[in-house]
Length: 269
Image (cartoon, rainbow, N blue to C red):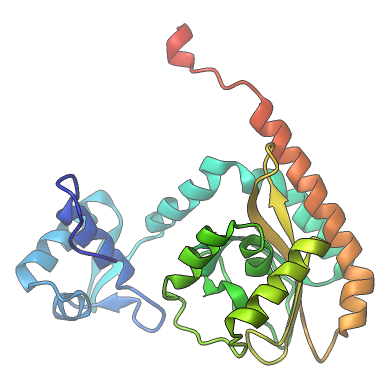
């Protein structure tokens, strides 16, 4: 993330604090002060002040091996999902979809050229895609990304795909502009998207868009399976109709929630 902004209202201290939080990644759940400073490029006194502030706020704890994040950090991400109300609306539909397909199902939203998973109901499998809330993948190589990219106007699509991925993953499918545009035209025309081992070997998925009350695409929902267990024909013939029904139900319920008047209790007290 940028440490310096483009305007006078940019708060560099806040950016540094978020950078310290983001420095804790898989494989390094605990870090010493020196490691945090090295990972962020911050001076040790600056990193120390940030860690002590985060510790006082309850987002970091000091341990024998250094500093580690606390579960309270999850509140930062969960607040985003809760603020939309999407998970509360989608959960029963997603759970029913998993029950009917026997496969893991997820919801993700577009962020630049990536998708970010915001909800998931998984099914234990011997071989599965390692996904949790907050996981990023390059959008164009995923069914969840395709249904959202296909809904963008051309200028917004170009701007989104111009952003470098922050997923740390290079997808197997690297189309040129003509192939990309043809794929997204097909997705736009049929209203759903398929990926067949385009992200990584062995993974197939089909996705449908989720819409708000105005018809705007706000997310995608998918059924994910392993290529060795589920054929493309079964994915499209059996799972896709169930997915499309669930996507329609989630979108309709979310539109109803949006239509409910929101009253500020402080204004009428």
